[in-house]
Image 1 (tube, rainbow, N blue to C red):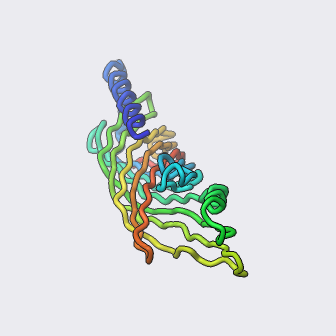
Image 2: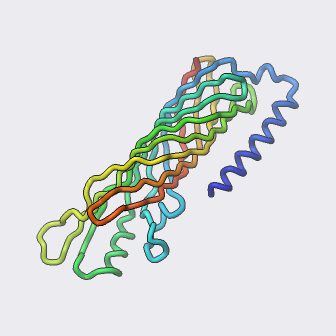
Image 3: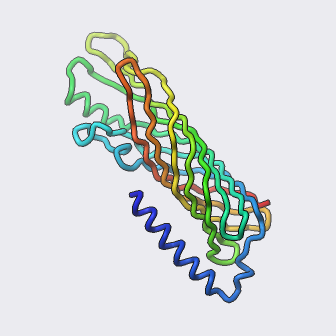
Length: 233
């Protein structure tokens, strides 16, 4: 998945760089504004082991369902085609209850039921950005960013045979992690001040939580697809 996203970005970048260089009206494609800021949100799709639902296939299965992401996006262009981008993000993912029930049914007779709340994380990344004009008022940004995330593991409750109420099998825990992101922004300028904004990003982190029974490590890989509105200044 990561190699595919990188290859697609490179192909688009090469294609549209050639297009912009060959255009006879390049001046109309230039965006003179230096900064943009946008709020965006949309679905966040787990990939890799994060979305796996069967521990028999991999012990790293995250059981994550499609979640959502909210982004605050910033960009500064020190050249028409190059700049710096940054994103502050929050995401949450519920767990697949059927996968939890299937695992319990195959592994134990003392636990008769279980539930888990969610994975969630918040973070900030920043890095270089390349901007390519597609047509008048429409621009695509290519980003490679890295930074910090604070991730929350699910709280799991289990119903033990013979007990009247569920008990917590895990506690509320957060962990710090290095995060990186590859992605693209698509910006359409409605005016010199406002723009429509969309982005598609691949995000990855690998937090480690310290627990009483040992370390819990989870690879969190997702593809985010968002839309929103922004301002140019």
